[in-house]
Length: 251
Image (cartoon, rainbow, N blue to C red; front, side):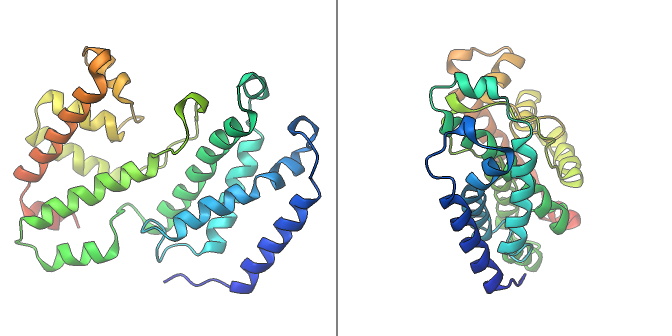
């Protein structure tokens, strides 16, 4: 397990609290670049804590590492803010948080991936799969872990109406993507394969249900339900048709 210095974390919290207290009474258009960064350091901490208490960063990065990576993401994001779009939004603070959150989380995830490598499956599940190579249930565990991990990595708690397009290069898992694409081509129909591929961004940018519907000439008004069903059926088919030995061979 990655260790961290508790005193360093405590000092960090105290410094942030003091710095933010000095900003009381200011509006966003009055902040300097440095002050804007300070203003959103609590957002960095909040997101870092979520990663620290999840399986994604467990044993990979300490809370201090996560804070450092999140702060880098915040600094880079502040320099890319589209203030015209921000000013036109109905809720300036919520829009800023939405934009900055996506950049901060992206920076943290890339750091985790660089430290962890390509496989993003909790260690205890990896061990269980390896120790039960003939158990069909391990195939289900493998795929559910992989797709849940990808879903977690892109989930946003923000209202989509406030989302600003994030062009941060997506962190990826090339070997896993290539492995999954091989199984998709082997076991799924063309439609199922395209939906799974586009939904999880296996060799492309991730697509929303509506984007997928348009790409595959589906009715947009039923896109979410239809795409969700096809994706679910595709994953079930992968689980049903992939042999345990194929999973073990990859791991």
